[in-house]
Length: 294
Image (cartoon, rainbow, N blue to C red; front, side, top):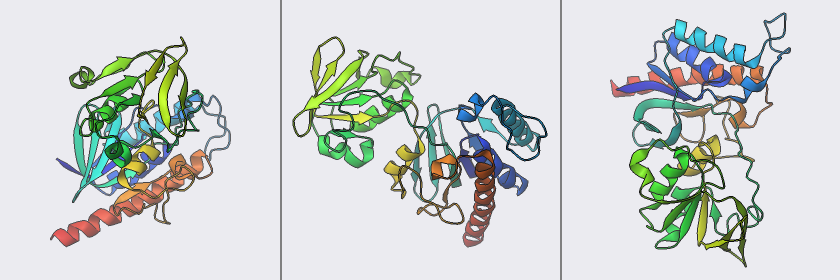
């Protein structure tokens, strides 16, 4: 099945866009884990239409119910990759889906990793993009920092360059569901104290004092973020945010972004507005593509 629109993220921006695409009769799939930071807000008093404070969780639930009432589908899965050929291919932990247009509305999650010298070695052995930098580590000893399926996915991509790969969880309990990938890599669950080396990273030092030599480390901590997608696809960014035009379109035709991941004023009203603009322009994009196919 080819969807007209796939929306990654089921927060205010993603649901807002989906309301427009579904009402325009576009076959739409929303994919998201439902882990929006909005759920942590106990009282929201500055969003239009509510005379009394409303919780973030209630607002999210109401949005999802509104979408479902219109026939919308929300798939509670983690997206680990996006690719574009003639059409878009969106890969989740369990499956893959195709669409004519895609919206990234994943918020702006930034995993806090407290490891000494991490920043020091960024670009000097520490990378955030296997697609961009994996080639430089052919036959070398590399590690992937992470504890969820995203880390396994990145490690699997590195296999085309080297077989010497260890997944380091930094003391986190593993949360892997891709059983077919688990046995391909060494797993090290020790808490990490520091990355060390001269000009480039040379080793990992664990909190227990032991060490592990590495030529490179790829960061895949937590779940894939908007910046991870951007790095892999060549999407233009600006200060860790996805760059978009007035139509919420990225530099890749048919690929849109909305909400916090675009680096805007982080408010629900802004996310909803951007989602509406993105939805409108996704509709126009799909209709234009359909005319070209006729």
